[in-house]
Length: 369
Picture 1: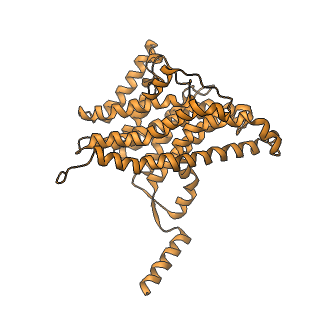
Picture 2: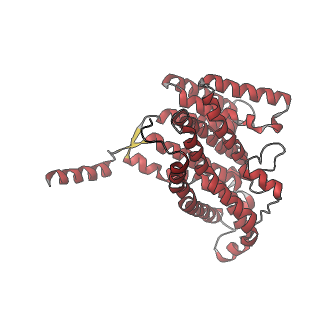
Picture 3: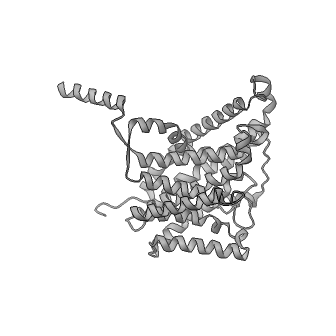
């Protein structure tokens, strides 16, 4: 009884004064996802003045690039770690494929189904244009390969072509034994420079984003000193891109996104935080947890709300007069739909579906190590 009371008191004091420790790194990763998804949302939400203001509208290009390249750098970091852990282990490649499939594909297919089959009945200002070939291109994740059809169904799906390309590239790199983070990063930058100089980027847009993944790989493999050097350089380049000339560099959002992701990863790696800090991070962490759903649905939700603009304007006081009203309602609607999507599509696919697939295709034989 005495130890029970002491334990309860300690838990209460820890809650009151924030003395309990939480994994700061994992929470920061989710917070980064939340920030990235939010910036992409606000980059797209300026249609008819929904969820925007003058500054957001003026900087939507920067915000969109920032969010997308944060996502790419994070993917580089996380998928490289996943591949390094699984590739080479018993049934590791099968488990890697299952993990990537259950993370990405079920919600992706459901999104395509809703847009191509049901969106016309729901009502939206966005009118998808597609045929059998375009749908097939999306089903095999080739929508942003040349010639691109990535805007035909859902304009944000272009990134998933490159995400899947990177998913495929990681095990290939690891299987052939390439582990040099510096070599991978330099190769990505040289490849982009060559394609840019020759005017070939439009034929293989992956080279335009591969270096963001490569920076994630670099941070994943770097020691503490290398992380700090990389982050200082990335921060300096970002500062120059933002204020070094008379106008902001056109790639400032991309550079800032990569630098921001790298710095947060480096600062939080292996760190813990108090319960107080953890609670303060909760909104961003929550957005990070539902970030894939938020990313994949937000564009369509914006245009559905736009379609029903007269209804909202008639029934909600201040809808057209105060941007805060329309912005708050649109944001809340996107978050709610994304939470439902996570709860009933994403989470089951990453838990029960993943377990079933692993038992069937990646079960480790008894006695295997």
